[in-house]
Length: 213
Image 1 (cartoon, rainbow, N blue to C red):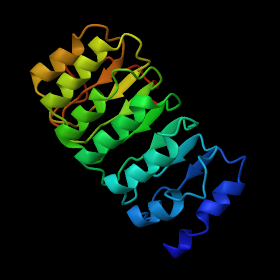
Image 2 (cartoon, rainbow, N blue to C red; image 1 turned 180 degrees about the vertical axis):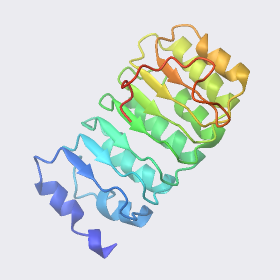
Image 3 (cartoon, rainbow, N blue to C red; image 1 turned 90 degrees about the horizontal axis):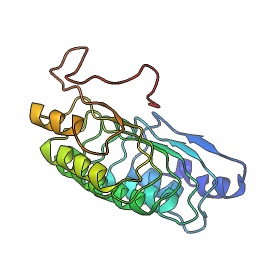
């Protein structure tokens, strides 16, 4: 962690820093705590945080959420945690953060380990979110509970800003896909191709170039 111990002070004085990329840096939860779980570092001006392909678990995610998403002064607009080690608890952690957040537009959790419980918790927390536009939960072992929570979220949130939901390579049944396809108030573009699916899904309605991830 010593290699990162100066990061909080550096971020504190870097008032013009709007984008931070530390992908493929072998970061673990201790590193994340060293950088971000630090009282002397105020909520920074960072808009885009890219931590993809590291070794961050739900413990590290909790520190990230507390620093960048939960504060009422949050300005973060995009969070990329693709290819980390975030489990079902992480779905609840980031879901609770997004529930009260008004700045985050894009979240990429592709290729983590949320599972059906984590996906369900995340979607269940978005009933009142009016800001999030793009979410990628591809390759997280989501299942029927997540599908039900997603449908319920759309049917209860008339003011949702979601434009794209990517949930490919998960464990949805044909009934799950059909329920998502036909849910009320759903104006979102989905891609729900299963791991066994071919190049097109039962309702492949993605437009080329629409995805932010």
